[in-house]
Image 1 (cartoon, rainbow, N blue to C red):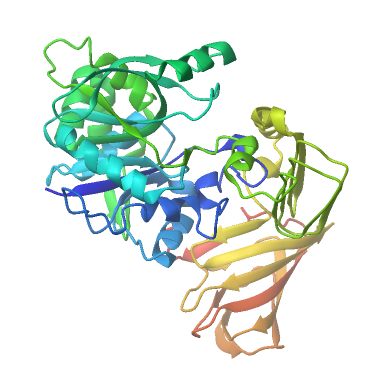
Image 2: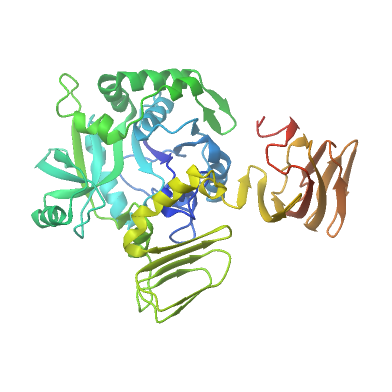
Length: 479
């Protein structure tokens, strides 16, 4: 039997806008340290010397919108997975775990279910708690991990612990919703309550039995979606119509809170305490709490200057940000949007995202820099009838063979060597050389070299939208 890491990489992280976007959520960001949250999660069991061996690669469940950047981040961190299960639509954590259990059903391992957007500062403490939960999970219980609280936190749900179990875990007496400040303090003082972490451990067969008994419609929809699925390189695409019909619910609501009253099921729920420097980084104030600070309590990432400021967090991606006379502020600067907020109001950032979506503003869904399976592009300037892009193509990668009805393009090579298909001709361009792609010409850009290719593309025409692309050949299965 193995311990199989399962990484749930859904969610949009709206309260961490403008760094987190719908198509580039918070787990893909390096908010703490140099690794992204996804990469850190994938490496969380490195060196684990517990009661079970760890499977060679994680099962990752993510939205198909950001499948390529997910695969690339795992690959660059040395954690590549051949089992990236794609959700065609978000349906919360219970269906996501059900898909992962179906993917692992043949071997029936113990699944360690980890959200991709959490921070764990103490890996030794994390691994010790995981090892302590293995006996209960191996014997057929569903284990959750409760964080030993260090403050009266109102932003988390709680678990009230019951009696000690023979397997070393604790019974779950109750799940409790987010409390007010006075109740949270009472929970802290009692010593009976743990924060609800969203981390779980369960055998694949145990989970499938529980979901089939407690949520039969969900179990059936997931099974039908899995059976209708197909493998596409490292990705497993499930049936879209079947999964769209699946009820949406969390692991807690769908299963955990119903176990105690489930007659005839015979599956126990239990909790293992964990002290590991855990945070779900749910909003900017949570990031300020866990980040390294200067002597005035300020947190800076990027090009930042502070003068007479304290307890302030600044993320600067593109420009110098200078702060004078601030206290308890959050400033997040990106190339296309800037957030300025009071630190005690950062939970309300999601209302800004709602307003952006209502206004169909692009800043809700995507960054100016867009990641593609072949590399990325950044729209560095635009105006009436023109757009300028910086394009970087990975070594050995190529764009689709395509054509545009409404725009022409000029390509200038800045670094590397480009292989260009332009109509009937295919030729190489070196640095400081250029070519012109007339409107309606079939064309392709490729990088035959071993270093990244960088070009500047100038588009001109009556319509410059990304949907003006007719693809004839595409390595990545896009229409």
